[in-house]
Amino acid sequence: MRFLPALTRVAALGAAAVLAATGLTACGDDAATGKAANPYGLLQPGVLRAGTLTDAPPNVYLKDGKFTGFDNDLLTAVAAKAGLKVEFVGTDFSALLSQVNNRKFDVGSSSITITEARKKTVDFGNGYDFGYFGLDVPAGSPITGFDQLAGKRVVVVQGTVQDDYATGKNLNPVRVPDYNGAINQLKAGTADAWIAPAEIGDKSAADSNGKITVATTQLSPAPTAYAVAKGNDKLREALNKGLDEVIADGTWTKLQAQYYPGRPIPADFKPGSGAVAVPGPAAPSASAAS
Image (spheres, rainbow, N blue to C red):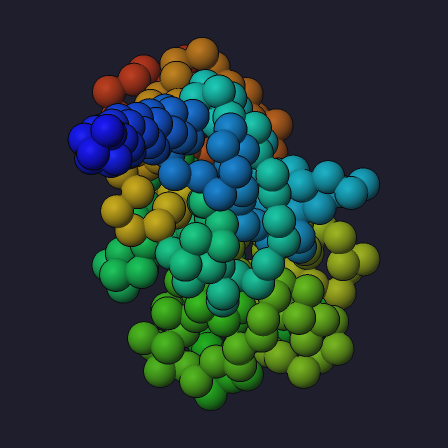
């Protein structure tokens, strides 16, 4: 009988070891299952949370309570190729990239031009669009070109490549947090010019009841792309793959025609990886170069 307690202790230790091993295996299985269910490290499995803007048509904007525009509609199509739904959330452009890298958003969608400085904060997918700088001025302004801005009160949206351009030209720009702020300054006559993304500048002028005109445009030096947190290669690669697929199936061409009718496409611009032919009339051609 003296041996029974010892045997009991041995049996208990053995059972504990089995349970511990089982627990470790279960934890490992749970981790593996979690990674399989959320391969892109999203804030919510199966849902791509996208930071965007509300006031920048035709690129990104809010209409009848729904986020839309070329960039957002394209992202919805790209995400669908990866089996993901998109949840859009409005924010200010000046905060967008840091919010993406801090994982408040899975992706940034706002005609974000790829620059070396921005690459220090986020990673970019392949370029999906090109862009022009537009120069919007109050109606009746004598300004007709970017070379006439010295000494003028020039407004830009903070943190944009237009901000970078104005700063690089030593224009000492007036920075506002959003596009509505820039438009209001032109309408009120408190700014002489607004350096804008050309498509947004065109739409703003058209909607201004004659108070704003477009003086000129010039091609932006780099493509636009979706931004993801640094190191999230799986999501970036999935978006790149989806982008090539929507280029191949004609969605990219359709959205170009819908949002930018008649806009020429530079001959040397190739969306996505560049390995997929662009179908339809919106395909780049030498005659469409600008």
